[in-house]
Length: 93
Image (cartoon, rainbow, N blue to C red; front, side, top):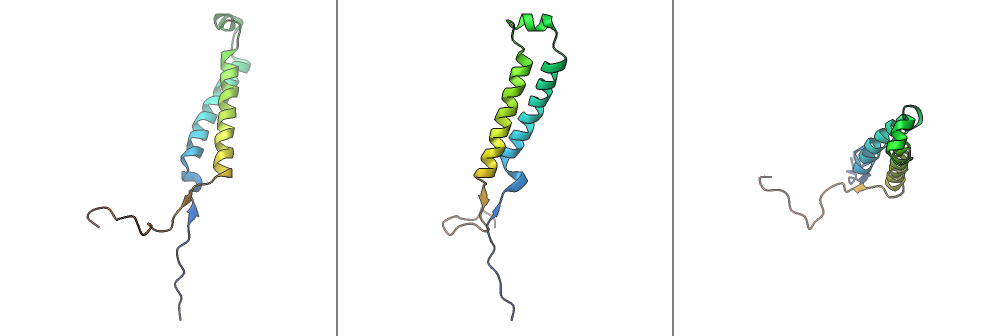
C-alpha cells in the first residue's frame, strides 16, 4: 500500500532575491576595490578632495554584500508547498 507524503515547504535557495542583489553589489564592490587599490592616480585622488573614493565605495559595497548574504543565511525564505486554504487560484485554472 503506497502512502502519499504531504509536500513539504522548502527554502528559496539560489532564487532568493537577496543573494542575487548581494552578487551584483559584490561584483561591483570587487571592481571598485581593485580600481582603488591599483589604478587610481594621485591626480584623481586630488579631484576627490584627497579621498580614494573608488577604494572606500568598493569596501562599502563589499560590506553591504556581506550583510545581504548573512541576512539570507540567518533568515531564509521558506516557500510553502502548496497555496494556503485562504488563497484562491488565478482565473482560468
